[in-house]
Amino acid sequence: MSALLRRTKKKPADRVVTLVGKPGCHLCDDARLVVSAVCEETGASWVEKDITRDEALYKEYWEQIPVVLIDDEQHTFWRVDPARLRTALRT
Image (cartoon, rainbow, N blue to C red; front, side, top):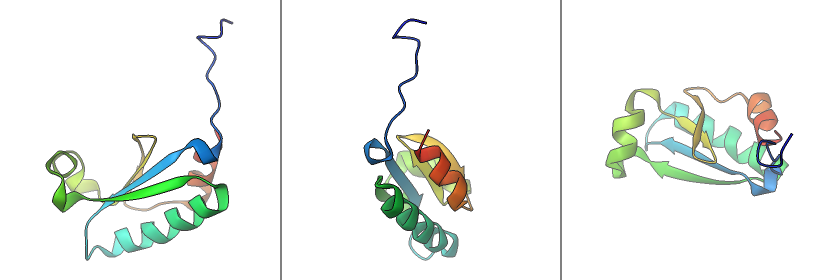
């Protein structure tokens, strides 16, 4: 298999998790706790984006918040499973 076709496995510390939510959202509060804990455990970095301050995010994800992205690709929405997030960060 050529080097171009092989998928390079990233280290969790090289991954970026984005939590897309909004203020006053209880599911977003729950997701924040999970994302924070898993990222601290794995060494991944994370950022939070407010859907009410970004029109593009609002249009794309309004009905799904909270949404979790890994390296700008959607991982999950509504409820964040810590084991699934941990596994995704390690693959």
